[in-house]
Length: 315
Image (cartoon, rainbow, N blue to C red):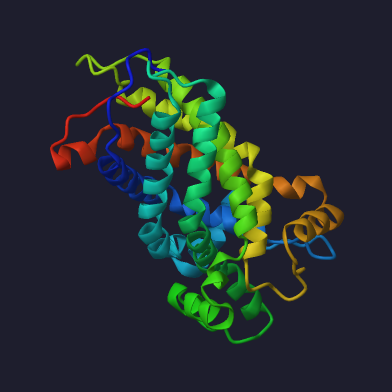
């Protein structure tokens, strides 16, 4: 928490620019691991204990063998397109709420930092839910295709646009918000934990020599990595449920789920509690560097430089 007096105003536009740029760079760096995470979380154990992928390495190997290196970036276009507003909303909204919830002296109690993070997480699901829904269909398509080929059936290629059109045609615009409750629970809990932890770690590190009061870039990277690692692991069960609810196509024999609690009970009954941590290591390996990179880029103040605005330290 900062000791300096609260700034007289909050300029949201450069924060949005910073968040958008940070999101694009962060997601591009970690997308292949995110694809592996989705496939591991969606695979269900067969009646005889059979699994398509036995590990992270096995999933990487089989995906590259089947689809080539660029197959690891399947679904990345829609993700990169929508992650710009998603990260812009998340990071800028957190700063916005921190500013307005802080005392006139610029101090922010821990519980208020948690509320600010939770509100940011709540706002982001407007963009996150359709982005994740479309991304998951593209990421999981290779797993579905492998099973279809093994069964001797023809595989039909699809695009994110095809999926979006079908969902809107059949269910209206709300068809793009399948799994919104699970997404909301995951993102709000994550943000309540992540943002106060990241800010506390960031405030404890070495400062830049320019008297700006900002942490040096590598410490912001470390703060994002550390807080992202802990928060990502904590909400992995919610992410597994969300991912399974949003997977529209299933391999023959895989269970369908009718809502959050149905997915929770069926997964527990048929696969046990460890199933809620499927892809957990992958998720940590995705979220920790993505948020580390994103926070580092966000704090560089690119938006302020572009707009020619003086950079002010956030609360």
